[in-house]
Image 1 (tube, rainbow, N blue to C red):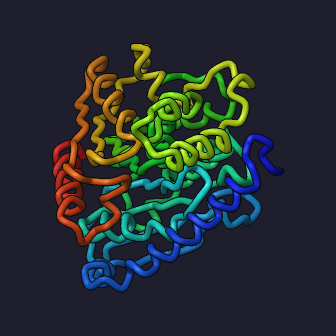
Image 2: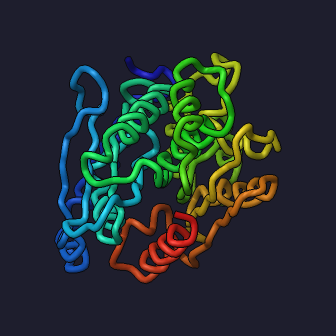
Length: 321
């Protein structure tokens, strides 16, 4: 159903951006560094995680070809402003973690152009259940699960974390809460360069230092994903940053959290606020900054900043997972 808050021009620009970024992602596979990342990794594609086959309800599993014993698992949620891109455009994260000894579950979810919040969160939660129930078949250890994502995927990563640590009012969040009670919360969370408070785009729209076209894109992202914030009594799973800033203490301890962000990221203020909010909790929490890095810079795996961010993420996981 068309979103009445988005103009035809904005919708057309969104489609053009999607096509451009998708083309860049596939072209990036031709880079020599990218080609080397495929070596030694097996990929199982298009696995359904919900009843009834729909493309957005599938996931990919990446496995190191050589593995001794059950592997720790990275559950990866792609970015793209909630309305663009896919697990296929984010292939570098699946291969990147797998070549370091992790089993990776990389998911698709319903994009905001098809259905707004909470559809993407509900899909993420369903895929999380699938991962817990099925990673053993691929050599994964369901007792060592990591949640990761960038941009919109960082938002969904924190929403999934919140649902494990706070008992939520949404009926569809109950399964995540119960699952965490049975098997424990995730061992670590990597929410990189996130858009973490969707109901309040004004914090960026009023920033005259941002180009007008960028402010327009942020408005589209937020209004497509959450067209009517007033329709929800509790926005903790759309605005996980606001919940963390509230100081509300969880029923279960938060897992260790590491976030990477570039100093030239247009939504970097959310990462800055996340760093402050994490001080309210007794858990290892860190936001690392990379000078000159743009939004989702660590996807450009052949660059110096990306290599540094990958090294830092992996060191954090080595310590906590």
